[in-house]
Amino acid sequence: MAEPTRIVIGTRASKLALWQSHHIRDRLLGLDPSLDISLERISTRGDEVQDRPLAAIGRNSLFVAEIEDALRSGRIRIAVHSAKDLPSTLPAEFAIVAFTTRADPRDVLVSKHGTLMQLPQSARVGTSSPRRACQLKAIRPDIVCLDIRGNVDTRLAKLERGDYDAIVLAAAGLDRLGWSHVATERLEPDVMLPAVAQGILAVEARADDAAMATLCAALEDPVARACAVAERAFLAAMGAGCNAPLAGFATLDGDTLSLSALVGAPDGRHVKVTRRAPTSAAATLGVDVADALRAEGGAELLAAAIGGNVGG
Image 1 (tube, rainbow, N blue to C red):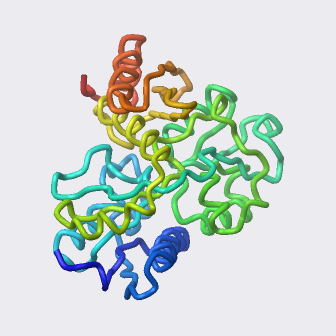
Image 2: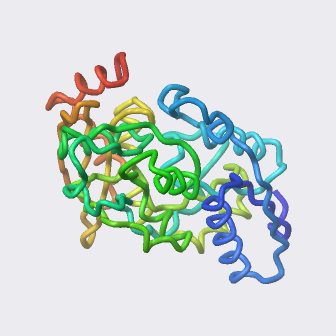
């Protein structure tokens, strides 16, 4: 491949996606101001289909496939993704050349009523995530979880006009857009276990583009990569994709990774396990956690939640 003097970054067109891609562009220009970097906005199926819940149209690659097509054809040189939107395994022709430092991985509640425990009886909570819905129901079985679609500003507008009593969003997105002040509660991981790789940005390139891999190596956070590798290995080992009520969150203490993961059902039933391993065994840790969850009843919960068998 040619030296990376001209780089086109592929990105979704939402405010958050553009913030993320501009962030990566600015960091690359900080490394080499002579680079010619532009953005190409790409509409994905997940952006275009707004009249159905994400789970109903299948989440895998919903926000990725069209961008990878542009990467494959050479229209773009790299793609910037919220790592939580990426499928757990990539086609062999692509590689994640950088995982960036993790932002706040937590979910946040936004509501005029205050915190989760202050919501009124049978409160209507907007979330398109089976993971969030399961954990909300585990804490507050009376809550009515309603699907919500749209970008962050669209969801906030729906809350403001009274369509919901509360909505749940990723803290990282609110923080990046400068809307941290609207959060009424940041939900700790022991209350709401985050999505796999939540808060991390992933820079994707063609696997044969050594020049981009070398350049983007400076964007890499090894802690974020270790956590993402463990979490994504867990998701892949569960064999269920992103439309399932699955959560996985890793932390690093010295050279020891701790991975907590959860599988649940729409009514709030769930099982959760935590395992630890050296950083060098991040991928193996993810598989071990998946095995432990299945052994403790997670396979049956997951099969019931998604209406079929899951990998093992």
